[in-house]
Length: 208
Image 1 (cartoon, rainbow, N blue to C red):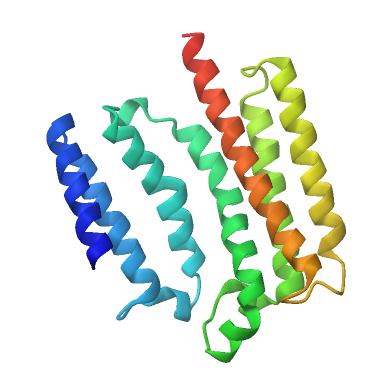
Image 2: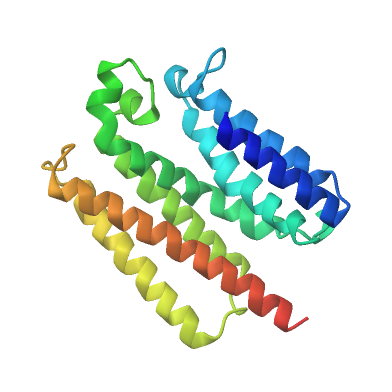
């Protein structure tokens, strides 16, 4: 309640500063998504597909909030780049729920990992990252300097290969060092993708 209050208060200040009510409404949507994830009557994290709320909140609402807070307008938002990131954001949400599978199952929390199992979830995670990476390079083939592009590509592929190898490791159980590395590599991969998109937007603006 305290965090929600201050989030709303900050959004009111930013709305007044930018003379835009959009910032305040986006903050309310973010609070609503958070409430819907954990609390009744929706409590989607226990009913299933709560990861979708995480993707919408972190992958869409927060970028929009930051964009409008800095005076951006809807037609200028980087829709293509942000939408291409959403699959990797879902992969990130799934990967962070992997270590909690036993406790989630015991508490009848119907996460996607509990529904389909850890091994299938890891395969889905890799496919989601592959989709985002391929889409980004398809839609933005030459907007980043070659050195940065090569560095990011090597980083992405390296972490992806590490994930793929560990995906079929039968010893990837909650609490194991292997699963810890899998989740850590997912965090690194997702962060690198966000970095690449930030560079795409930055260099795209620099050339326009």
